[in-house]
Length: 235
Image (cartoon, rainbow, N blue to C red; front, side):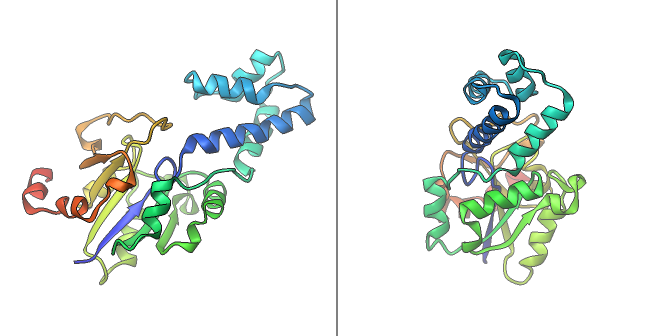
């Protein structure tokens, strides 16, 4: 039976913290040119590293003594989302995607569509055999995970080719509810310095297994997820 491995993008195939820093540096250039305020990147990255996730730009401007009116923040967010990121595939992801593992591949990613497509282009994902590459924002935010539509679309695309599906992702708050409900196997990858919390908010949010690297996603590990005894325990 053919198995399709379906990947998330952020903090699964690359480190999302790289994207955050890349975006902050682009905003830093804008802030210097438009507001004449130096030190934005250093301050924002320090706050980010200290755990600040909400209203980061507002907090950074406040520390720098600069006004943070809504129009300024909106412009900064636009720069952040529209910049060409300086990111790269994690080494283990590059090795896995280029390897002769025998799995079919697909991708499901949330986030603003234009932003996610730009990430995918910079990472070179179109040259790998993902079928399909799904960006849920193409259907609207209502279809972001945990909505089932993207997972059902993968099943439809692989009908007659694959009978088993595995979703590999990082964020237990939203990533595993839909694939588990459809009978998929689920794998949580725990990369160091990941952006989202690692702990599932409930038993329903758990993945079937956890790995630290895609090097751990061996055929034996994948096959074990479909062992009849394990599947019965998972049900």
